[in-house]
Length: 391
Image (spheres, rainbow, N blue to C red):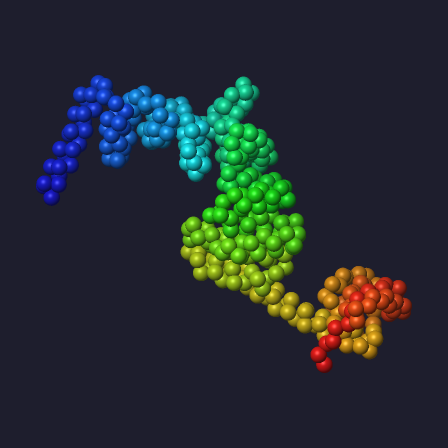
């Protein structure tokens, strides 16, 4: 124990002497190594000087990104925010991959929000745009600021689209994550079709997050009651399987699919996803919400089965009534408002007394129109072909 203490004490003393006695560093690597030693010891204040020295001793862009990224921890401790902002901006403008850029953006916005200076940051980038400089990063930051720190979905969408134009002209365009963020803002602004398209584009760009964004696209289409498009997106999400980047994301994936199924009146398909969501979450509020939703989905599924069974029986009787032939009546019925339809079997329609029909029957590969005058009150039934029904 004493030996370990002596080793630690000696190392700390050596580092202290190195910084104190080194007016200049021989090269960037030497300064960087000293800074890293302090950084790893979480002495970020002491790491500032050698890191800044390393920055002056290199012209390599990738090395500068790495040094600025490290310096952000030191600059968090300063009373003024200018140096933190400048380092964050350098990282965002020069980071070699999108994930680093996105993390730095959120770090910057969060830092300024906590300092109570988010309005200053907003004005900084609005002024940049007014002056026509640093347009890409300014629109990029403003889209995030208006997304969460100063919520304004319309402005967030506006700056996201401006950023997309610049990014497309200078490179590959928006990343999957950026398109997903745009889709989220469009959802908040009730631009559901545009949101669905953004999510679908995001899903096509990154296979790691594709299942998540197909889930989001299904949610957007369900807001428009577009069952066909919702089901297409749900099918793709189901095919790819749950988002497994974390247990919490897996929970939200199952919950999101369940929401879309319920919204499009498919409670039976929602049930297994709600059961899995309940199994995954440890948050009591989430669990209670899912349990309530599961009970309602099970109840609705039973009612649909009962209704379907009743309709199937009614369709058989109607088919036999019309032609004395055994036929299947397709369930493409619409509710109308004429009373008095088939008094003999009216009571089989769950007590409904005001219905109007435009029903397709399948009859013998020929197309015939029947008018059931008194019974249908001049409404027509199209008959396409006959299909036997088991007796």
